[in-house]
Length: 383
Image 1 (cartoon, rainbow, N blue to C red):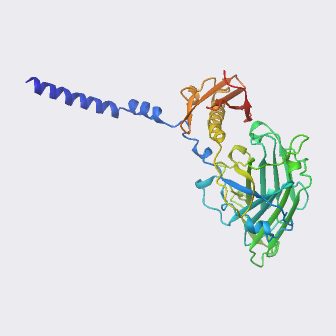
Image 2 (cartoon, one colour):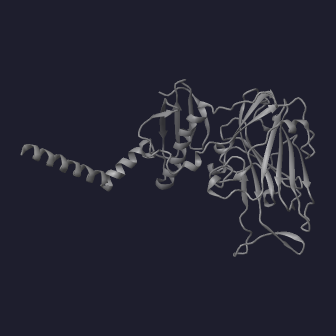
Image 3 (cartoon, rainbow, N blue to C red):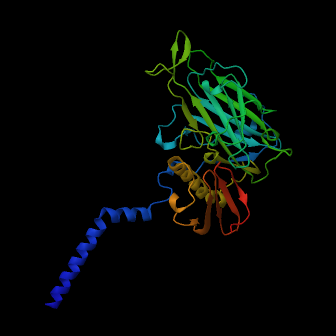
């Protein structure tokens, strides 16, 4: 009798436990416990592309023809994708880039396939992306501030600008800045502005002086192992031929349809001005064609993912509450202990109504920080 009673109790206990597991409150608590703190922001944390650029003893001739020996040795990047990544269809036409460097310049070669090459803008610093264009974004010190942008169309019209910080941080571009010493050239494989034929595409060649993308008095020339952030964008418009001219295709509202943004390293959102999402450019002193370089993501870049997580969550929180959170827990991070590649790190947050600073420290004792403007740099050890 007692045996049957115990068996019945065990069955009832199992049923109650199962019901508890199916309870919506229990499920919600379990989900919250196991949910990644990055949930909902995965599109901003895909790993950026990387490219190893090799030192060259012989600079290419900047004529738009990509037939120099240095370009024969350099490797192509992956084909460009939509700026949002896999969320959108692949680009209609292929785009790819090569790079090389010497003691004075970063060299860039770009190839854009296209059956109808056109361009209208001819004045320096006109808004070149109103035409189809090719764009370069460079952040030499990888802090997301004080970065450079260069745009060019098929007429080799240049639009160059400097940004002290991204637009998202209440900033504007310094359009009056010029990239002194820039050399650029364009070649059209076909005919420009002629709808009666079919073109193959167009190519761009650039030589960017290191002295012109340096902030300060001392030119910062890369050395073996230097790491920049860089990205490339191709702006492409749908057009129709009207009275023998290329005209931007319009929607039902009578306005031109939105442009396509095709990029090397996906941003995750339609915004090129998130420098933390740009690709990595690794400088190798080794000539191209010799033993390949295996790029390894620096540990600090993995640590910074948590800083950017705090940054994005703080911006969300500010949008809802009109102030920044003073608590990591409110931002979905239970405490200041996080693991990066299996190693314990300490995460800390200090905040006021309109400002905040988050910092992370790993086993090596080095501390990386980020503030409300997205400025990333090193500071002294955490207290």
